[in-house]
Length: 322
Image (cartoon, rainbow, N blue to C red; front, side, top):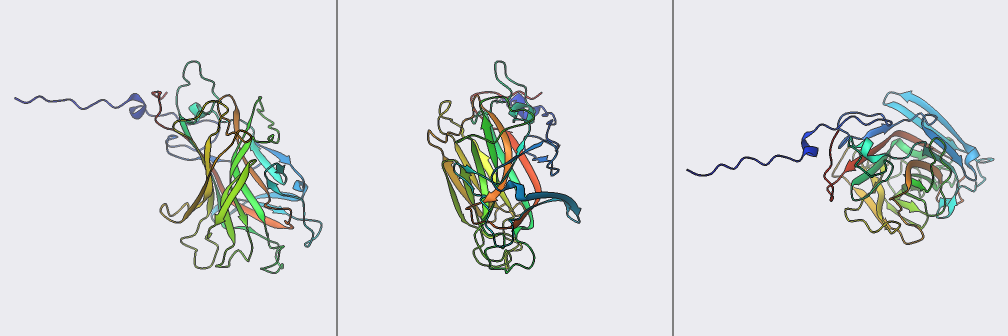
C-alpha cells in the first residue's frame, strides 16, 4: 500500500484574513487592493508652497464619472512665465504632502514584529505603489489660447511619490530637504493635448535627476482606448543595500484599464547624495504640481483618483496577519 502524503499547510500569513487598513480609506483585501486617498485636498494633506505656488487654485467637484479635483495655475497674464520649475534642488510650485507617515505593517493588515518601528519602510518587506489617475485630458491650458502656443499648459508637470524625513512630521510635514524625495512624473512637452503627436512625457523626478520618455495619453487622437491615463510610482527591492545606501524606484505612465497596454517606466538607483533612505526615516506620500522648466505660464491639472498600495513581499521574515 503506497504512502499518502498530506498536503502541506500553507503559511499562516496566506490563510489568515488580513484586517482592513486604517487611516487611508479603501477596503477589501489590503494585500492586493488599492487604498483610495482623499481627493478633498484639505483632508489629511498639508500644502507647501514653493515659488509660484500662490498661482494655484484647487476645486473639487463631482461629475458623471465621480469626484474630480481641478488645480489651475495662472501667471500675471497669459503670456508671463512663472518660476515654477520643480526638478532637482528646485522645489517650486505646489506640494501636497500626506499629514501622516506610512505605517506599512498596519496598512498591510500585519502585526508589528517585536522590536520594529511602525513607520520603518523596509524594502525587503514591502512593495510600495502610488498611482495618480487623470481625467480624460490630464493637463491643459486656458480656453482661447492657441493649441500650439506655449501657454497651452506647456511644461506643466505633475508628480506623485514619497518624501521622507529624519524627524517626526505628523500633522504638518515640511517641504522635503535636498535628496529626500522621489516621484513618478508626467509633463506636457508641447502641442494640443488632443493631438496625435508627441505631447506628454512620463518617467521619474528626484533631487538627483529626471528621466522621461514620450507616451500617448487617452485624450490624444487615435489613442482614446489604448492610451495611458495615469502615472505610477513603484519602490521596493527584495535584497536592500545597507541603511542609508542606494535604493531603487521606478516611475512612469500606463493605462489603468489595459493591464497589457503601453507603459513607460524609468528606474532610478540613487547615489550617496540622493539616497533612497528607508530604514529609520518617515516616508510621506506627496503630489506636486509645477513646471518642468520655468517656462510655465498657465495650465490646469485634472485628477480623477489618488491611490496607494503597500504590499508585503517574501523576505527573511514570516508575516503574521492579525
